[in-house]
Structures are given as structure tokens and as C-alpha cells.
Length: 118
Image 1: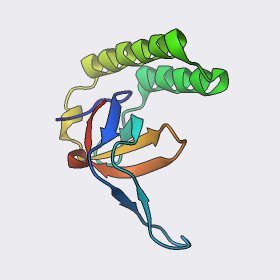
Image 2: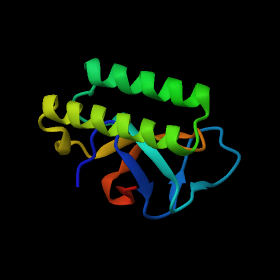
Image 3: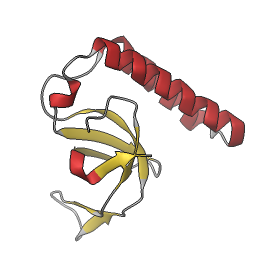
């Protein structure tokens, strides 16, 4: 199932993180939630929808919303995602995703099979 920019997702399994200079093995735990920020393969998403999502994320992080406000921001993300889907045909052809997790960690190249809708 392809995910559009702004989609709320959850890891279906532990995902190992590798990189030069890392002190040792690191994994993100199954169940960790986040939002798709873009794609790591194919045409970059960009555009007005991406700018709107960036602004939503900036506001959300600055305000540290809870309860009703957090739910409202989730609805805004979903609306922007639907808007982006209408103007980004073929987005499902991309295999790798850039995901910003709720703990602030950003991971590029997350496989589609490691994600599910949250």
C-alpha cells in the first residue's frame, strides 16, 4: 500500500539503523509512529503540499499539542495528504520513504513493508 506525504504510519517490525560513525547497532522499535515526509526513490514530492506539511509540522512541534488540538492537527495533516494525493499521480511507484517519527528521529529509505497506517 503506497503512502502519501503526510500519512501517519507505524512500524510493523523493528527497523535497523546503520550509518558511518554510529557507536553500535541501533534499531527503531516496532509500533513507533511517525509521518511520511517524502520519498527516497523516484521523483521528489515537493510543491505546495510539501510546504503546507512542513508548516503543520513546525507548528505542531512548537506548540506541543495534546488532546483535541493534537487530533485537530492530525486532521489537517490528513487533508493536506489528500490534497497532495490528488496532485501527485504515481506516488505509489516509490519504494522508499522518509519518515519523521514522534521521537524526532528521521529515517530515509524505510521499506513499504515495514510500515502500516496508524
